[in-house]
Length: 279
Image 1 (tube, one colour):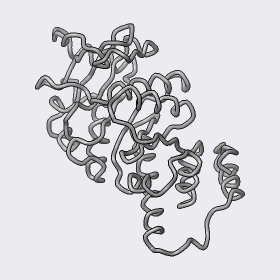
Image 2 (cartoon, helix red, strand yellow):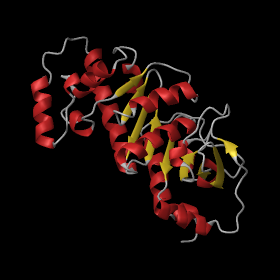
Image 3 (spheres, rainbow, N blue to C red):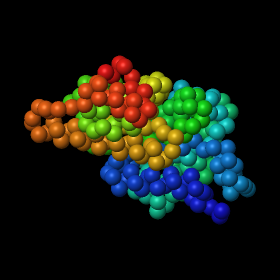
């Protein structure tokens, strides 16, 4: 292995960025992606960076309000602030970065990437807080956080009550695959200024229960155990939102739909635990 972009997990990271851009989820510099590297991946990257001095330590949160001690000392691959997803495949070293956290989980330093002196995404603190939650709940299995701006889902936040149950039922009812792909439902965060501690805390609380959280009038936050599953969740929810908005645009009242009994049957068939609060 000769370079960081040739590492398998970096290739998969870049691939997701390219797919997301091709689907129109990332206008300009919209959206962000992070990956919690395994110890073996961190070791492989470290070996390639031997003799290359790291950047200075920087606060995870400019206000110093964020600490993720549960991830202390860990390494992450993350998109850069102000960077375009469409450019990641063509110029990875200036678009993404490998970052190392200190043991307290309050500071990071760039070990590779953002060669023009940039910073990780402005929502890096949100990613870390949510990764810390998922690391604890899944014993380290969930390592991907993917945030995008799918248009139909954003449109849906203007016409569906911003409540977990309402949003979940609206999405589930569009196509049978939905309660299979996200049987726990979706959480919803009312509009907040992105990039700050408030939205990070609100999202991380919902991540205790869900893998997908809607940010009203903004986009979707997905947590997954692989890059494929992160994109799969994003695509499924956006497709469901598109169907919902197409039905709404028809101007006709739906004549059919999946019942609560139907959702339970889907869960029984595919092994999903359908929460009773959604029935």
